[in-house]
Length: 267
Image (tube, rainbow, N blue to C red; front, top):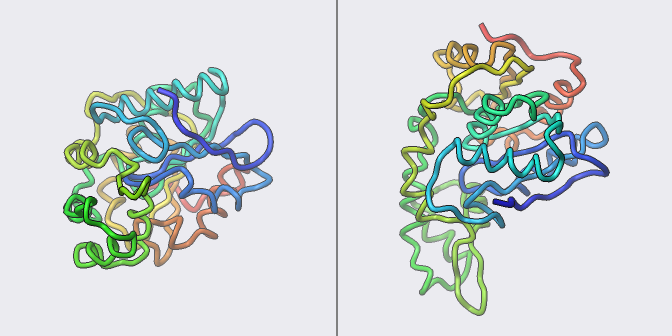
């Protein structure tokens, strides 16, 4: 599977970004631009998202292997990338580091833990809202925003979700594989038990202060898999940390790349 990518910066990339559920690689453009000139970034559309191909089932191992194959094809087996992943993409990034540590020089996990995450933002409500839209009768993206406002009250989140709506020859359709992702929500919320081992490279965990996805009870499992993990908590930020406070996220990743300092080790 060849994934759709965007390159931010000149030359060979040394940083790769993986978005969360219902996202696209371009969601990280602002952060990637903020990291110039220290980093040239590759922004991936994960399978079943954005411009990347659709699959017939969901699995974190399959997604991580698709990313690894794409990196191998583009950059070779000695890519030495720092990998950044948010939410679902953070789980993909963790699995990639555990399965293919040869590709991963460093790992940045944004607001997700290697554990069940069904307690978090409430993606079941979002799935219900998106599936309830009758695209055959939809007049505009604005009308779609109004229709899902009761289930998704935050305008910024609605705008993020509805970037996946496309109109061609007068007909609306989903760019992402909505039905597959909606049906796979339990697997997306979970953590693949078949993934074992340990990644001994440097890891930065970035979490939002107001988010429920990375909590103290997760620190033990995090350190068991990633013993060199350090933590950066972004004050006032929620689950979409890079949207709530891009400057702090850019500074944290830049410091990680330059190995100047980390906020603090995990307890």
